[in-house]
Image (cartoon, rainbow over all chains, first blue to last red; front, side, top):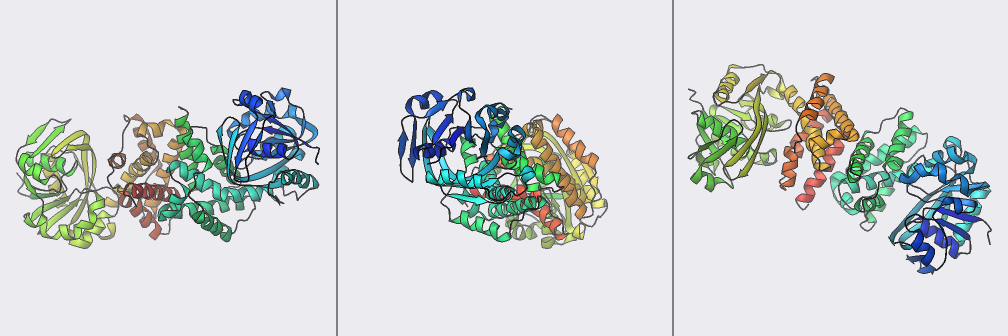
Length: 313
Length: 313
């Protein structure tokens, strides 16, 4: 049994799910919460899951990072819209030889975290998870759950598959989470954007499910054009995404059941949208390399408008 | 007093307004209607206008083009979404030496009409008019009204300012309509698109007024980028739109009172949108010249999706 201690920063649909699974597998897990703190410290966490329901009547809950123990692995499971809190939140909770695992959407987040804790402490994870928080401490896991882990090398230089990410992978596998490894975190993140950018963006802008977007010849064409722009963005970072990968994503989405994207759920719930991490950062990364991505720029600006309107800007 | 006879095809907010003004000035005008035919043939047309209200108790109303006399000037005032009707509608109503005046939005419509009646019979007009049909035969004229007239030369070759468009201009001026002339109809149409494409498109897609689009830094930037794409489209047709024209359009829109665009009104009323004339035709014209306009393409595909959804596609 691993002796590694875990801190979960952000105990929502994602952090709550993975943290609860780790604790259920016998690991020592510490949960940071905000609005749900009182409820969870009294009642624990309930997971309703396609893989089997379970309840943790007692968890180590905190509302202040200053009260948490320093941990071996600090999992960032906040929405990226909260990342302005990280410079104060992270340092007190990471052991000197600890690791920060970034389980967030989008691009460039590891770079931000590296500026706080040093790039040798950072690894990234891409979650393929479909879950919702239905009420405080109550998470509904609908589908998937796999994580792709990758080392963060300074400036996203591919850093290979190290012993330490294998160990963290084993902890998650012991908790029943399917784990894959990538030698090139930046490539993996760009590939995930091939799905995330068109479907998250257009589902919000056009108030549509993935099935509706794929059933209409015009939006289906637009989705494909945007995917090719993402490949151009990846190429500007010397990462190659093949045409066949794009075709696979399109075919896969056609076969999926109608899906309300996570950004659409955030929008419908009037929560802030992760526009900067998912759209802004890729645009800026390509821009630095002198590459313009006009259709993604268009979605970015449309989403910034809609997000701002929701927040009364 | 001019002896020219006028046929108005499409007696809505635009055709009804201009046709009523021409009749009030003493011209012989014939109105084609569809759903409002019975009402207007019984009750005539009422104009509520910033320039003064008036009523025409009796007008020459028709529901079938076959019953109309052949006219000297046939004014196409239908929405472009009805243009599939023109091949049957136009020939019976145009005199052998008559003229067809296209008062529609967008690009390329004169070309379609030329294929029906021959390019020597076609002239174009760009209307800057703010009016609504509030009920059958009742039009509310809110602002503006100016028309820019231009000859159509085959393939939009600039055809100069001819005697015949001066005469038609005089008819409209006698009816109190401000008239300007352009030597280059295609350039004038591209310039009008500089306003029409970004504001009509984004107002529908983002459910926004012009004021909201200009108040947000992201959509304001997007509007400007789209305007520069239109200039690139015009350039692909060897027409030049200056940066200062674009800046003037932006400044002018900032100073306007908050405005619900005509496409937004159509969308809110669940009427078909003029996506092909305003977006599709410019895209195709640039495409033929090998020029890709990615942001306008994005708006086009988004609008086709929204328009299709309204029509239950």
